[in-house]
Image (cartoon, rainbow, N blue to C red; front, top):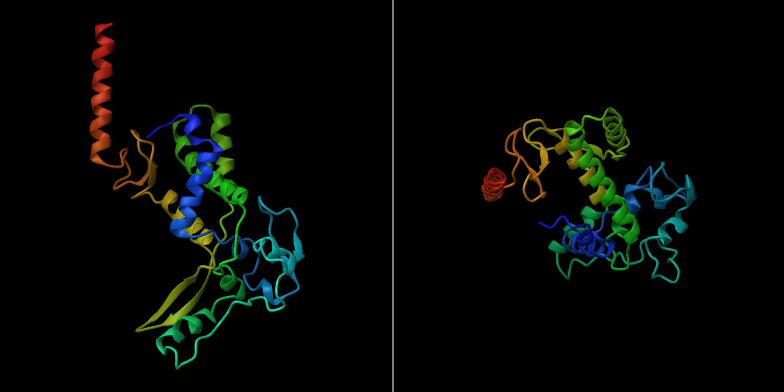
Length: 243
């Protein structure tokens, strides 16, 4: 894997973000940023301190417009594309809209074809996650107390929004997480992986790819990387001995 800075320029990173969005979907800033996912039911949306919007509050319609930039104007109905199929069309198809009714209206809006998110926001969010992830690893390898403290502050600034939950009754009561965005899922999973002592999230010592280690001392994402690392290491020793 190339570590050349030119390989990871903004154009390359933008392309990778687009590949991620095509494969997994957009992060869901619309519902991840507000203090409540039900903001479309109110005139004003309230926002916690974040990297993307400096305002603490703004009109809900103005906020929604950020995510529908290609709409000339938002319909009076905050979810104009919502259509429920009739029973005559397909009885089974009723399952999807019935399930959707349990979600906040803004969540439904995120699945409309005209929904969009700023590429700059996406790139900033991915860079923040990368910095936080690397800080969780590198601070153990540093001797400089000032740099260690800087990494600790970086991790402490991680603003993971915690999802809510509800109780479902199956054969026994079960707690179910309510994820209103892909971003909230990533926040929780990333936090769990970084703090997992048994199977921590690490970067491969050879190819630099992120991987989940099978044990706390794991250094390589796969046996092939370990073999290549040992080969280059042995070649380096032979070369140095000849000098």
